[in-house]
Every structure is written in C-alpha cells, then in structure tokens.
Image 1 (cartoon, rainbow, N blue to C red):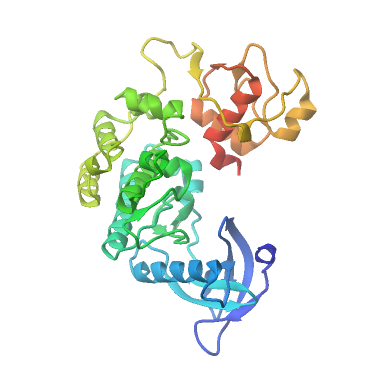
Image 2 (spheres, rainbow, N blue to C red):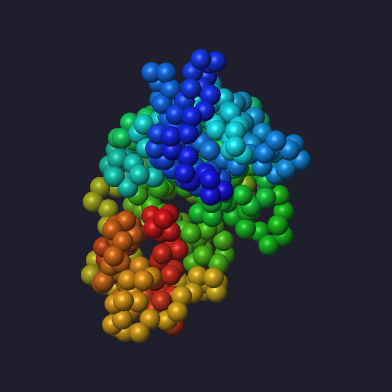
Length: 381
C-alpha cells in the first residue's frame, strides 16, 4: 500500500498503442486507493491507483475486477465519471478515467455553493438521482453515496458526476458497507441481516440533499445516536435544525422512512423533488420554540465507545489541547467558547451549532469534544 502514495511521474500505457500517460499530481486518497491527475497526448485524465494482483484467487484481483465491471456498465451516463481502461504494472492497477476539474461536492458545500439557491440544489439532485436510476436499471448499486464521491464539473458545484465504484455491488442486498453517516438504519441492525442495496443508495442520496441544504443531521442512523433518535421522535426536527420548508420536510421524511419498503422509488423522488420550489426558509435561525437566541441549549450526547475516549486534559493545559486539536476544557462546560485550532473543524463547528452558545451536559469535558468531533468528522480529515 505504501507504494500507492508515491506514484507521481509514473508513466503508464495510454488509450492507444503509441500514447503514454504520465501521472502528475495526487488529488485525492481514500481507504481503497489514490487518485492522480495525469497527462497524455494533448489530454488530461484522472488515474485511480489501487493494489492489484495477477492471482484470480486473491482479494485484490477480485476487488479490481468488480470495480471495473461495475464502472464500465454505467460509464456511458452523462452524470457518471467516464471510465476508459485499466493497466496493471508493478502490483498497482491504474484505472484511467475522465478528469472532472471542479472538485468534489463536499468542498462545494463548504464554499456555500448551494446556499439560498433552490434551483441549483434541484438540478444537482436530479442529476444524482438520474445517475442512480441508470445504475440500478443495469444492476449496479453504488453503496457509498456521499459528497466526497460526487464530483462537480465546475467550482460553483454544477455538473454532477458520480465517482468511485470501489465498494459497489451487483447484488440486490448488502451488509454494512459505506460511510456511517450515510448508511440507513437497517444497516445498523444487531441481527446483521442483509438489506436492500437500492434502498441504501436512496437513503444516502437523501442525506446528501440535507448536506446541500446546510444540514448534518446525525453521525449514524442508529438508536445510540441521540440526534437520530430526536429525528424519529420529532416530526419537525429537520425544520428546527436545518430550516427546511414544510413541503421539503415532508419529502425528506418520506425518503428517510425507517421501513425501506415505505420509501419512494427514485422515479417518485425525482417527480416530487422537481415540484419543490423552495427548500429552506429565509432568515433561518435554529432554535426551539421555548428559548431565545441567546439561551444556552442543553444537549444530551450519547455515550461513546472506548475507542473515542482521549486522556483527560487538565484545566488550562494549552499544550495538551494543541496535541489533540480539541478545545481546552472550560468551566462551566460551554462548547465553542474556545474554538479548536483547525480552521476547517472550527468552520464546521460554527455551522453545526449556528454560532450559538451551547451548554453541554456530560461527565467529562473531553467526551463532549470527542462527540462533537465525531459528529463533524468529515471536515476534520
């Protein structure tokens, strides 16, 4: 795997016999590979590099063939990144694809590309749902829909292209695959039963829509997550926390029904989405009906597993705070009074709580910080 992180200037065969492609710059990395920009004969490409093997019985070989087969089946759709070919050399598979220059959707959301722009949101989501509809009709299920895997043709967030079919499947059912925040509740069932791959993609696409509207509803759709449990209890949870309109709220709650069979089809989602003229209310300020904008809000955070706990920090120990990237514990426990040093994490903390004073009740200050970091973990990477 270490070789995958130093492949700049590597030369690989191109799309024709007399063409070579040179890897130029790394532009992304994930758990399954690294992506580089590359230059060929008067054309630029994106090249995804993953571990490879010539042994048909090896896991690397089977994963490579599965990704190639799935991506090739859907590559012709205008809202899917175009796949060209794959070359294997030196134990590395080089997947050559079209270079989409506008970056990913996650960065576009952080830049505010969709703020107060209902038509922009609608066009993007219809493009994404169209790509999923096309894939499902051909028996391909993405299984890892999230903003990081959706590319934009332009920096303003327009021109969606679905990317990264590394964990996709052609099976109608799957088991706990993807990214926690985008996995449906049936994926966290203690029974560990297989669940619908298509329903999983539709659920994840709905969470992406909420992200585009400025929301980050929960860390995982599981009873251990207090934010998700509040969503289940309160019909107006998304109105209060994301400022969505009543019509958008009704649509989102149907798409996020706990029963997969109760969720609308992709065709129904596209039809209803096209009928929504406004997704968020003007001048939204997240508050409960019984409190003023300056009243600290009591937040009950779920217990965290031992893997998320850090050593306790002494009051005023700035060096310890710097080493963990978390705020120094304060008394009383008011999160966000002293923001973390990471600009990206500080930005998302402000976005998550809308710059309001939040009084957090917990036994240990560090547990509070860990819970907040877990909730906005994507921005801290």
